[in-house]
Amino acid sequence: MTTTARLRPSGPIAGLAPFASVAYRYMFLGSALTMTGYFMQQVAQGWLIYDLTDSPTWLGITSFAGGIPMLLFALPAGVVVDRFDRRTIMIAAQGLTALVSALLALLIATGQVQPWHVAAIVFASGCLLVLIIPARQALLPATVERSQLGPAIALLSTGQNSGRVIGPSLTGILIAAFGAATAFAAQAVGFLLALLCAWKLAPGPATGRARQGSARQSLVEGLRYVREDPTVLALMFVQAIPAFLIMPYSQLVPIFARDILQTGPEGLGTLMTANGIGSVLGSVLVVLLPTQRRGLLVLGSLGAFGVLLAAFAVSTSMPLSIAIMGLIGVAQAIYLAMNNTLVQLAVPDHLHGRVMSVYMTTWGLMPLGALPQGVLADWFGAPIVQAGTGLLSCLIVLLMALRSPTLRQL
Image (cartoon, rainbow, N blue to C red; front, side, top):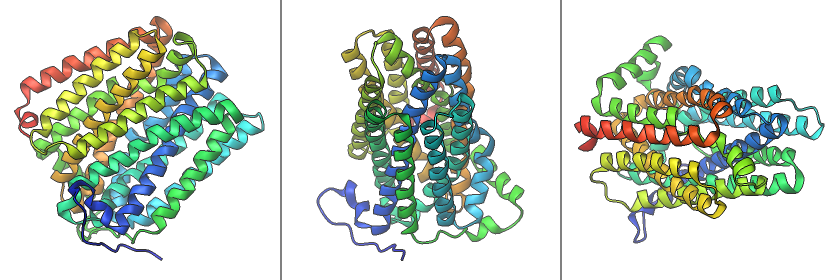
């Protein structure tokens, strides 16, 4: 039985008002479970592929396989989300994601896993994620009042970033104690629980306007809106910078953990957990920060992200690296949550799926950056590559801050 019952917000903290909605609580929990599973996969696949191959290039290939679906399929996925029942799409995609995770766990447990297996399954998971994310984002406005949408987005980011804490730490423990197969099996269980949360939501049928005309016309309508709205276009461009230059940093962390910091899967889990804790703290700050000058906060946090990444690249101390990873998480969370909130608040409901699919397409630039960064790390070393991309992103952000009054005035 589904429920979308909304209760009147109560309590002294206005930022927590969305939790008065039963439907929003299911949305929040399902999102947290999904992202916990996703970050479990990120850590487990990185450790597994580097253990199998000892190759930074293979790390880049695997990251490319997981991210390329966002570039290829995010736009048509947005059309699907706006034209069909969003809840059904989420349920089906969550179930299939659990299935492919269980398949990889079985291959590892039986000793049959090969690097191409990992890349293929990561690609399949990425194809399903491009349906889950815009479907969830498009359903979000139906779970809270319009006046609560800003806090709801910020809180949802907090729940998603909790996955950065739980996922990596749990994965490090599971790999060290039981092996990688157990980590992927636990990920599959998490996706099944997220499926149950989606089941409890009310159906999210397509809007009337989205069903008018052909799928191609629907796609063109969404792209035209992004192109013609200067605020949304600027936010999309800002999203593309870290996606290409600095977000691929996560694929190189196993190299730092094993070869530079001389630690094992527990150390990798610790680094990613510190990043997750910082992300949660950053998300909480977003809820508490004032709503004025959010564009400057986006640019400032993105610039800090790049500087911190360069600092992590030159660190050879495990305690210092843990601290820097925590600060990276804070900057990353503030940037992502602020940018996401500004995009969603600017978009009309009937275009949510398509515009958020364009937003996801910018994430498709991440594998385009991940693959060459993996190859360059083979040639020049991971520290040089990571420091260089971090500093380059800072330079681009500075230029944008100087030349884009639209962003500064948000």
